[in-house]
Image 1 (cartoon, rainbow, N blue to C red):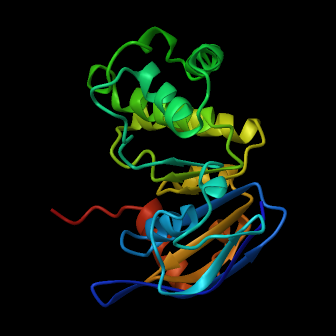
Image 2 (cartoon, one colour; image 1 turned 180 degrees about the vertical axis):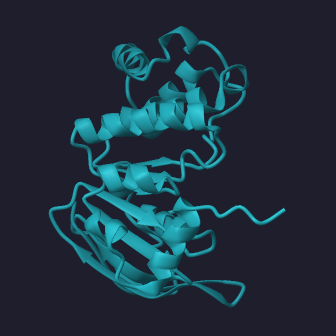
Length: 245
């Protein structure tokens, strides 16, 4: 993956969410965005996906300029996994995946059925293929969302805190599914609060605060942070001091 962002700005109701952010990465497989809530991570991910419009600056992904009118060719090669699985509740898991292939990618249903079945099997969902999202667990629904993103054979997958609303057991299930992406050498960017996971899987980590990049580098930055901001963030995430009773 090649990702170049230059002097990017994004505001909501005149409030800066991304403030002059720049990033230039090459030969990258897995990028992890970390930071406190409201730091701009999810917004940045949506801008990279072309789901939202930025005011100024530029984004290039693998040579494609991502703008408000980004080509369908780019969007069709980007899989997005939302915080809440974003599956259609009135459709079965199988049909949720098939819908994207039929309606967006104009695939022949007969040819695509075998691929959907294989993906469901790969993510341990085959026995739930004909269930609707509300009939399976949150972890299973997120795995289905990842399978749907995989179905389009993307060049890049973007995951926006896929475990944010899950308990530890379901979180483990979903992170294992994400690890399968890494094993398949698929490029992806993940916004996550699971610091241990980011440390073990990411080639490059970006720590954000107030819409800016505060520190970035390999997983080593989590072992020896150079900035007080990252050190304070990690102290809050990784340690807990019980108050006196």
